[in-house]
Amino acid sequence: QKLEWAKLVNEKTVTADGHHVELAANIGTPNDLSGVISNGGEAVGLYRTEFLYMGRENLPSEDEQFESYKAVLEGMEGKPVVVRTLDIGGDKELPYLDLPKEMNPFLGFRAIRLCLEEKDIFRTQLRALLRASVYGNLRIMFPMIATLDEFRAAKAILEEEKAKLVQEGIQVSDSIQLGIMVEIPSTAVLADQFAKEVDFFSIGTNDLIQYTMAADRMNERVSYLYQPYNPAILRLVKMVIDAAHKEGKWAGMCGEMAGDELAIPLLVGLGLDEFSMSATSILRARSQIKTLSLTDMQELAEKALQMQTASQTVELVKEATAKK
Ligand code: PEP
Ligand code: MG
Image (cartoon, helix red, strand yellow):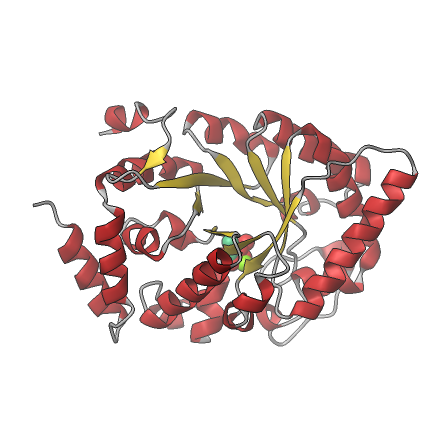
């Protein structure tokens, strides 16, 4: 099987009836790139930049960050690279920031909330990204966006830094797509409004499921509520994809669900454009998608949206995709 998959490294990802989707990889450091390339990743769909900031005593400098971003952009040779701005907080701490302990870290001061408050940290990262933008196909993504105001505030800071760099005579790409993670239900619900202002969505199901089901993703005792196939989750995912397409934008997914063998048929049917997963899942997903028909999966997804429970959905998918 592995040998069969290996033949797909340089192929596009196309369904049996000719519909193309993009299979991208999630990475944490530039060192992960070799795995992306050897597994035939068509893009980097999520570069989690937190790792640049973790396991050290102080913040990474602008130049240090620039070198990492440049390395990833160059390594991908013009293929898209979605870099997520700092998503610290929740389960990821930075001891040197000396932030007060919180009762509910996952509902607290994390990601874009922190960046909009600690603006120097944010501005430094954005400058490094903008400077690196000329070395490839950069897309910038803000994490944990809950309101349009947050998106607009973050975008305004990005525009300010861009203007400053241009003023300083530093080259910046003028084709950087700007998108958001959809991992908070409020943003999924208002996706039609966000879609008018962003260039793309990437659905972060690890958090979207946690926040929709009100079940801490780190807590074993409530892990039964982590339900990717719950029709409530599928309906939110559909809202996001439909909203993007209505405005001519694309919608991807970078949570674990995107690489899940049972979820992939549903996501293809819902019209997801980009699937970002661990590099080692890409070839398996590509070989799976080649066997699926878009029209059949659309029918399947329609049915799934009408299910009542996650286990019903699972049964439905298993039946529909069982080898005939
Ligand atoms: C997610 O929430 O689905 C996601 C991709 O982000 P992280 O797992 O880094 O929180
Ligand atoms: Mg997340």
